[in-house]
Length: 142
Image (cartoon, rainbow, N blue to C red; front, side, top):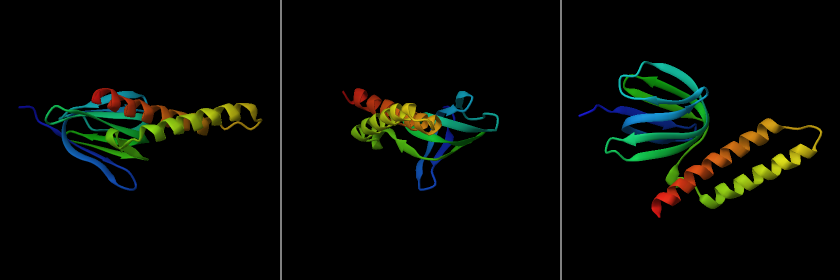
């Protein structure tokens, strides 16, 4: 039987995940990475995206993260996220509303002389990722 690795995803407010898992895949700043038990230790920043992991029983799970840091050790992965939500906790209607607000903000910023594209694009990316993970849940339930 394959060994598992401990996954912890925490935010400043709460612990979101603390489980034994088979594999962790996360959105690193330089691209997606995967970690299995025995992995070489490393530390990286995370971009907005989806952390995927396979539980000990084979179920795949997803968690939205809006950036942060990940530390991989041979027997543990710790993700310190700015914010994180399990797929089941994402409100689809709220995610759609956030996407609409972000798109409107980008359109408004394009008309201004002082453009804060960085903030507007970050809000858009967060909304898109949350919507992506929430809609995946809805498709799988059907």
